[in-house]
Image (cartoon, rainbow, N blue to C red):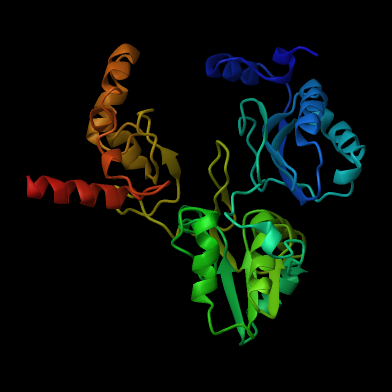
Length: 357
């Protein structure tokens, strides 16, 4: 097996062209499982061969602790994909969560990477039993548990995810990463170890580790939403339940979100108008993730600032020259302190710096 058969080397333009020429629809879905994998690299290569033949696109992480997958499957190959997945003993009967809203261009190519962990959590798993997870609750059970007087609902996602949608009265960490969210949640819940803790995240994977982490720290009644927000939304529709999740569910593909309810609970980072549409700054040297309304999208041409829109409209060669000086190539990012900075905070930092000069 030669190396190039295990990777997709096409550029973005060709990948988009290939997608546009497809004559079928796709299903976007996700699944994960914490399971011992002794040779993740070997498994990675075999999965790539199998799934590439079926036209699967997506992003999959493998580690010795398991698999975390977000994929797009051609509908004509959907049943065959599920059958082939069952041929791997470690993935039999795995819960596959189908996207709430689909998009044929959710992913451009198949990427399978071997990682140290399938979700970066910063934990030393040898210090506690990471398989000792909390109780799994269905949508109906989660709703009922939320109504109990001793229940505390906790969002285990990053701030930019909960900003556009979350469960009613949930604790939403200000963390920019899951690694930061874990200790923040533990500190916020300190002294409430005997109360009913209700955790949720996008698809359930972060709650598996978070619930075990809290149980290790002496929380006695730890529960998690089975299948996360994605599965919750499906069960709410199928069982005609009231959705206690309001707004939009952030997803890590080109869609950047799925509407769970019609509520818009967030605001444009540029003008404060109601908006729940995330975007990345069109200036590739900047690429800041932020919320932008339609009016500001037109005003700033998909960029975070006037400066970035001017840079994005330059030719590629001029942009390459600018990138030698990061402060000129991405004017706001010089004030960046975290992984996913809030645009408003960066603007305030720049204004403060301008006042001091």
